[in-house]
Image 1 (cartoon, helix red, strand yellow):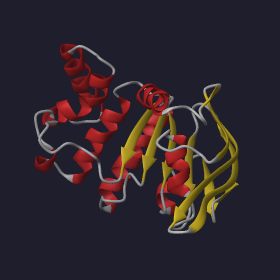
Image 2 (image 1 turned 90 degrees about the vertical axis):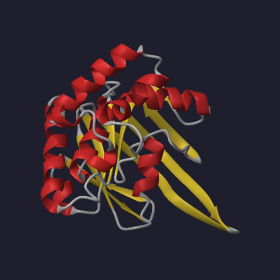
Image 3 (image 1 turned 90 degrees about the horizontal axis):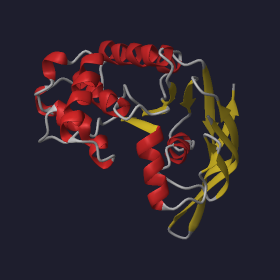
Length: 221
């Protein structure tokens, strides 16, 4: 599913060059559940951004489904993100003026899916994550856990091959966070490939294996 070789990512902070990723090499197979851990500044979020085609590496190879992604243009990357990857963010990233159905349907607008089909699929996804009774609610009318479930439904709407979750329980209490992780575990059991970034060992414990980032380098278990 994913293979990266010799991946580097450099930034400039003022005049200082910072290497956020330092020759990272790893492989993630279809159907795996992988956690990426590391302290602040270790490179874990940078790695997730590159894997999610939100950012390009400075050097190295990134092969996604037998296709070289490194070096692609913005339009190509946007197309891959919409077709292949579902994103779950710590801050949910829901539009406040839209109800749950409209928020979930957003990726389908970019895919030019007809309105009635967008609504049907959105309602189907919301029911799957246990929100049949919250479809017409806006984010401000829902709890943090419910908002994260909306975000998960949105991540699944295009039937992506990969789900990327960046600290998906970071804004939730421990009980709600455990419920969200159980939902992700169930998605993994149904065949989804899941990669999540976390600093919490109890969250990483849901994964099959852990990649530990330190000073931009990856220690693969």
